[in-house]
Amino acid sequence: MLPAGLKARLVAIVGPLGCLDRPEDLALYEYDAGVDKGRPDIVVFPRATSDVAAIAGIAREFRVPVVARGAGTGLSGGAIPAEGGILVAFARMNRVLEIDLENERAVVQPGVVNLDITLAVEGRGYFFAPDPSSQRACTIGGNVAENAGGPHTLAYGVTTNHVLGMEFVLPDGSVVETGGKEPDLPGYDLTGLLTGSEGVMALVTKATVRLMRKPEAVKTALAIYDSNEDAGRTVTEITARGVTPVAIEMLDGVMLRMVEEATGAGYPMDASAVLLIELEGLAETVEEQAEQVREACLACGAREFRVARTAQERDLLWQGRKNAFGAVGRVSPSCYVQDGVVPRTKIAPTLRFIGETAARHGLVISNIFHAGDGNMHPIILFDARKPGDLEKAKAAGEEILTYCIEAGGSITGEHGVGMEKNGMMAKLFTPETLDMIRRLKLLFDPENRMNPGKMLPTGRGCMEIRRPPAPAPAS
Image 1 (spheres, one colour):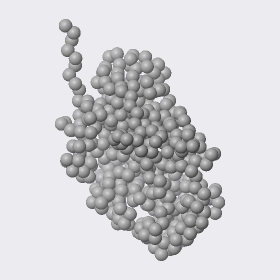
Image 2 (cartoon, rainbow, N blue to C red; image 1 turned 60 degrees about the horizontal axis):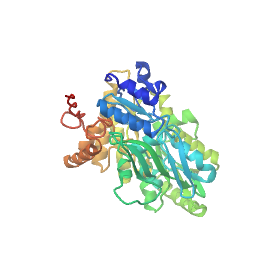
Image 3 (tube, helix red, strand yellow; image 1 turned 90 degrees about the vertical axis):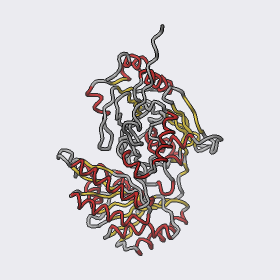
Image 4 (cartoon, rainbow, N blue to C red; image 1 turned 60 degrees about the vertical axis):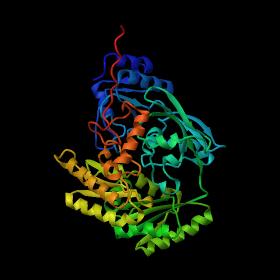
């Protein structure tokens, strides 16, 4: 329920067409690509940093929560208003403000779609490296909030490796700048701190990102296996040979069949697993590494090793990978995507555990993931219309993430903690570490109004919204 007078104040900033509060409109903003929901009280569409600062100031005055939202493609509930309040949708702050190819930099607003940065510069031989599977829809603000990765993380790193500076608005409406085009400014690395902070400290209104030159040569290969575990062992074998591909993606049999039926990408329907492997660099180096990768795959039991002969074949293989989640929708009414990380040497036993978990719960679980850095994405198929099915899927997901922790890994590699996994943070961190994270959050947001209910465990005495006493009436 909005406090009296709040809507009018917001309309004064963004205009009547910049606010939504009808139930049928709000319903469109109560979910993301995950399984949780939470409805905002009002949605506002700022056009400039000054609008965001004014919105934050009003939210502080009325003591209501504030949540940022980009394209809503997140998978951990990061953009869901768990406790209502104001949802700040950045769809209208979608401009590329500056392209500086001499310094290999770009300055963008948070609503810019990830792929649009590459499209703006690829004609001049550059690209933006972080490439989540949702890159045709997801926005830079969300990528920064969740520290998004993508298939090419193995060589290029995640979003934090490509964000050099930002402008952000604090909960009191203050506008702050940190970092910039320079590679190493003095002072604390607030850019690094806020990248991956999931919107619980500030609202990012501008980002300075790194651009990279396109490589001289690219080679994409498909290794085909009759065993999941052989495919998992191959990843370790490739790195043991001193080769670092820009991407090693794995699809198990369940997933590759769904993808092939949907896209016709050329994946073999009878295989148990495939590895999609990409190499980039100088032409001579790529040729030499391709032969080493072929030998590693065959040594680990690959029955076939194919190299894409044309750009069209390469694009088709990647089309299959990047449209995988859409392919799942043709087969299952609902799915629950997990995001655990394990050391590369633990991929094979983790796949075995996922299979055992599926059998134990009577579920179908498919796997498609960034094998090069051990970022597992088991996709749990279920029917939300069946009583108990969602709870069963969540239980299976928690068991898998617990196994990832025990294997020396983490509960997230790129999707974030959000409201989906905050209850598991105590399994990953000590109470002392969680308290330090909590105190750092409250340093930025002492009233805990910025995206409350995310990342850290909740509950009374933990991270409930802190409402300061109302000012005393004037005498």
